[in-house]
Image 1: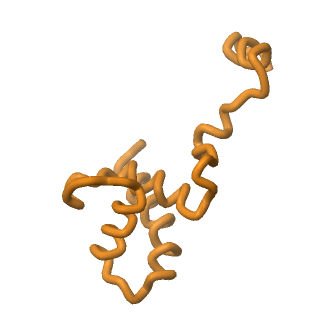
Image 2: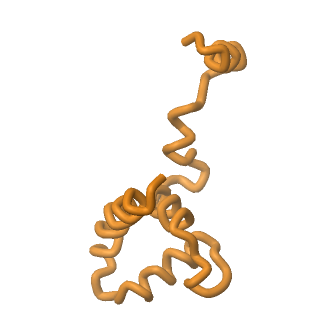
Amino acid sequence: MSTCHKIAELFELLGPQWNKEAHLNLVDFLQILADEAGHEGDLSTLSDDILIYHLKMRGRDKNAMIPGIAKDVVPDFKAALLKARGIK
């Protein structure tokens, strides 16, 4: 994934969420996101991947599958074997 694509995706996900908390400055909002994601340490060590996945999952059921993984789930073992062999 290119850096420009990650930046665009992060801004696309961050904008609507930050607008809901418009009274906060960006650093304060990022700290809230980091805390929600369970990140420990300085914001400088918070990765863009953590932010992107947390923003994708924010507000969803805690046990919900990450959207990028959900598309690859197969219903059973036989379907998984066929998919692995390139048979759909």
